[in-house]
Image (tube, rainbow, N blue to C red; front, side, top):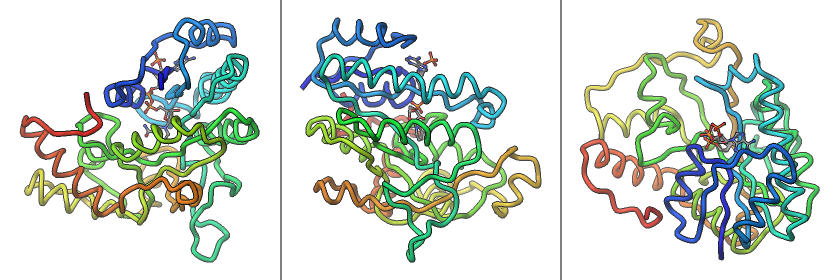
Length: 288
Ligand SMILES: NC(=O)c1ccc[n+]([C@@H]2O[C@H](COP(=O)([O-])OP(=O)(O)OC[C@H]3O[C@@H](n4cnc5c(N)ncnc54)[C@H](OP(=O)(O)O)[C@@H]3O)[C@@H](O)[C@H]2O)c1
């Protein structure tokens, strides 16, 4: 299998480093023709899109830049899907679990793949808009992730983010361990499965679980103040409330694609992260 990756940011580069059967392009998609030309140049079996606009320094940027956000998160994915359909290749797009706010209407309060999103901020709305239309297309799969947790330190890694905050909320969430995400996405690409998939590790993680492991394994002297979710906006730390939710991965289970339970995967990732922070070599089955 030859995978062509569009989007040379955090996740595009991370997947390219892990997948020996991939090529990464830094071409910016401006039209269906520009995407098709790149696909025809590389002749891939499948296309993986890690393209997106998530705002800098954070998603609040997107609220002030709706046109750029919708362009990157809705229009460009559509152009890629059209180009892939013309070329007769499967597209796997990265969606986000942040399209769901709060509890679902189901008795267990968890969100299923085909539930309707309820987002307010521009970033989440744009991701939901893309999911709504891309999920109608037979050649497109969508893998929704949430709050990436990685053993490689980086600004996109939830471990680095949460450990850098002096004030932290302690809410329950579904999260995505990056090693597991890359394995899931590779299997979806191999099998060219269409439709929506929740690529979150089974189980629930509280920010407190992450910080406690961080203290145990990385920095015993780490401290932070615990605040409520409402305090985040009330204290002006962010301008809009963040999405907190629990997702189930029913469609991955149906497909027989397994992610490790979050507690096991989080500990494993934090141990590797601690070794990376000490400058040791890390064995990673996915890394080249
Ligand atoms: N990281 C997360 O926390 C997270 C969580 C859930 C979902 N996701 C989704 O995962 C995807 C990748 O996220 P990421 O964290 O890797 O973001 P990232 O680091 O910001 O990378 C996104 C990449 O997309 C590129 N891009 C933007 N417009 C493009 C276009 N028209 N054609 C080609 N490339 C374009 C950007 O290039 P330039 O910088 O050169 O513009 C950037 O390299 C996004 O769709 C995001 O919504 C991410």
